[in-house]
Length: 260
Ligand SMILES: Cc1cc2nc3c(=O)[nH]c(=O)nc-3n(C[C@H](O)[C@H](O)[C@H](O)COP(=O)(O)OP(=O)(O)OC[C@H]3O[C@@H](n4cnc5c(N)ncnc54)[C@H](O)[C@@H]3O)c2cc1C
Image (cartoon, rainbow, N blue to C red; front, side, top):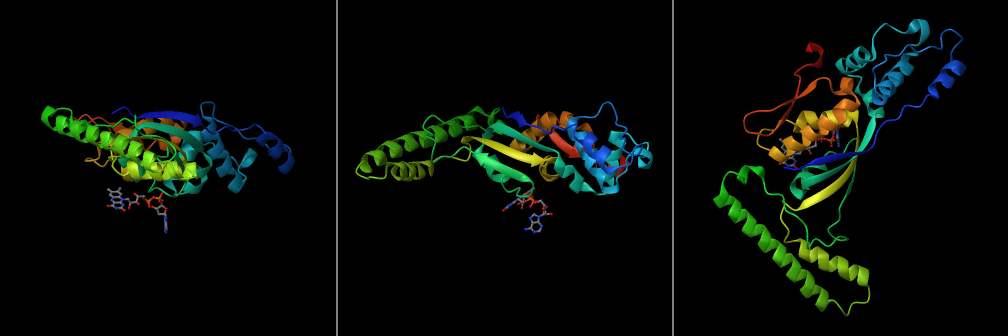
């Protein structure tokens, strides 16, 4: 599988917070002692958490950023994690996978390649990795998708000719592609831009990352954790990637964050 995650946008933590602290708190209490090693996403989450209790200056505990965020997670103050937001482009994924992805409604936004506005005549199909070691089955699969693609092209060309008389060209093309796409398989490659936050990604990884029989979901989950994890290690400290003998990664959440 060749899933790719391109990070298009990531948290930026602006230094304007200093002005706010100076204006809001008495002199001497307006200081936030920060951990040197934290990322913009981690700084943002810690700052948002501290705002709730105005725990700056003498009210700040000696916790590091990592300790602070782990405590938030342990205590279930997950809403603070929603401030850390990323936008990524996913490629090398199938329509079967994207259909599962978009079931995640809360804290996710999506923009997906349209099969009505885009001609899919040259689309690629993603052969399930499970077939790689069985050439006889791979050959059946190859034949099926070639058949689908041929049918797609023939229906597209045939309907376009029959719809030539229609005045509304835009809707005629939409109708033609809509009919033709109905023969494309679940393995048709797609592209999705998705925006999520640390909380919604954590939920996704927890419920999707270690479903043993879903290799594509496992690969995408691992690719997401590999891409986003370093952006905020403390936000994902309780997830790890395992590499079992079947060759597909598993994203494994710690059973209880408080135990790690
Ligand atoms: C192993 C597996 C098998 C599945 N099989 C099927 C299947 O056969 N058919 C199928 O249709 N789907 C299936 N799903 C999809 C599943 O039902 C969910 O739609 C999907 O996992 C999204 O989960 P979610 O609702 O928790 O996520 P989100 O939509 O991102 O929601 C996140 C959380 O917000 C809360 N929430 C969201 N919406 C509401 C609401 N309306 N009311 C109250 N709380 C809300 C819940 O706590 C939820 O967990 C499967 C999922 C898995 C992991």
